[in-house]
Length: 293
Image (tube, rainbow, N blue to C red):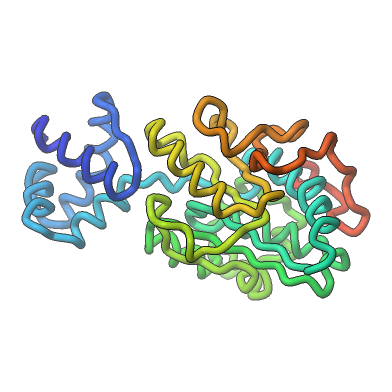
């Protein structure tokens, strides 16, 4: 791979997905793209780049998908899900008592563990949401991971990563060495292909947005732009969840830190809740953390 090849790939990935590759990431690119080159029947990455430059859109899409990080697992980092369950949803149930409707967006939902984790929490709330319309939308750039998400099928290794044993037994069925989520949980999530660099207007407004562990791969200007778009897609009193290594500080004035809730942010127009609301009696009897296998 020549320096010119690397510069071309950097530009393609930045333009198509927002992913920024620094000069020291050549090893990562080579490890991800060499299997793709072999599959395409070419000798190496330089030949792969030539196919891309010749206008092979499928090849470009394959390269972008190969370089998109899809690391995820159920109830990842646990704290955001505890905030969601124990304080955010109770607050929103009070605030939305009139219209009895909630919309939740998992941006870059990958293979589905995050949106399905939220769906299981909502299902466990039971009577507290009787008669409510709850919509969970999960989006991702990759058609391949979206297809896996829709099936709700996971390996033994995948269900052992973060998923409480009680929820595994209650909401999954085992077939051989794999586990599939029950149809009622799968039906709670809509999966759509979407690029965070696109226009968000058609998605509508959301009460909760999970955009976790994605923005760390973008440069500062792109992060600022995406925060602006997320703010427009959020209800004025909505909530934004970011990953543990992500923050809005120094990047945007459209969001501010939510007091006492690490990783949770509020649109600037919202009034922060001063403290975490106690766990709801109608909700989960134990938190995701306390139910670990």
